[in-house]
Image (tube, rainbow, N blue to C red; front, side):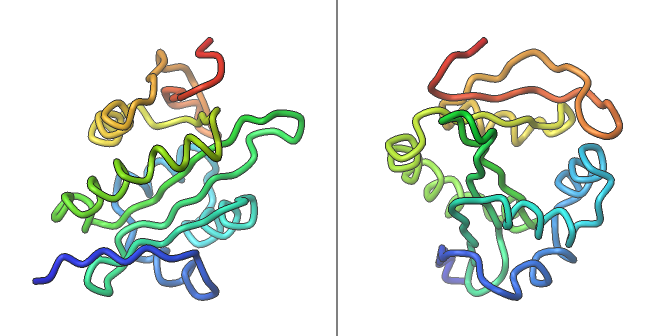
Length: 157
């Protein structure tokens, strides 16, 4: 196995490429926040994003992500990422890539925040490792499940 991670902008067809292969933790989060089917949630995230990325590990889908404007009146951006089981079974290429990408993301988007399902403990640990502040869990989304707001830059209120 080569473990070659290729990252490119999202393209037509990526919704279908990822919709059927997301991790269970990401499927639970989609259901808790929007009740949307995976394909609909991915398409909506891509449409709302200024920048998007797809990560393919040895040609297989690993993650799809982007940065959307959190609010039209603010400089705040909302990073999002949905992954496949490859993130859990072969995390090193993903971890190396995301750690190396953070300085550039912060230079382009100095205030980022979003929400993460409190059940997503590995993702929360990854966000902390990247430098995000994890806030207390509060009810959020369509099901009102506990979610943590995570943020970097800007006010951490």
